[in-house]
Image (cartoon, rainbow, N blue to C red):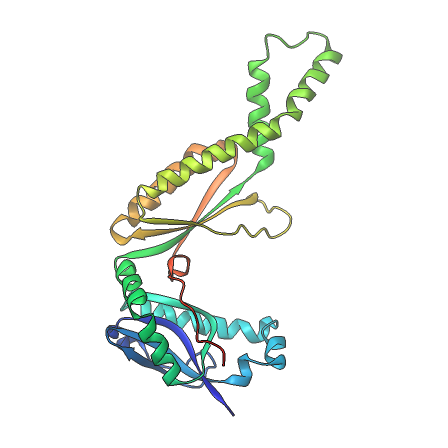
Length: 267
């Protein structure tokens, strides 16, 4: 069997204390490869497990990928307890220790700067959902209240006037949502050092909480996490009547704020 090195994350040498037990395959042990004040957390894996046509089929099999993805994240989380980390994506492979060492040396400065940035900060995810029916009902009620003095007293005509008002609410709501979202982002950035917008992945039909509308990542200094959480709570209280709710989760490995590092060149 041919072997490759599987990369979990990059850390400071202090990560040694967290490196024990098996790697992604549940069998082979973790180890460190050092480059000055940076270490790569790696383990050996069978090349055929991750490369080639049979591997491509396995990578689409959740029963195969799931446990390995969990072990991948567990290794990163253990390293995070003792060191800042630059996490690697699942199934990042290097052909040999020599190519790994060369890659580490090439990207050493960028990796080291990132580790310095992450030393006192954490990535937190903020996801927003909107109960659009609830929001539209609030906007319709407000619009009808504004028009109360000018709406027709004739039931038939009044019905059509109200329908016309309701038809224009969608655009008004969208404009409000855009403005409010920008304001929320600015408010949260008062307690963070960096911000990223991530792709909004909808799960099909809206659930009871509403449809997903926001997916953000913030790099938050540990000293400001409580303030960040409190700001989320105040924002939720402010917008609850419109069905807009923010969900906070973390801390996570700082995938959203990692430098772009070119992988090992293909032979």
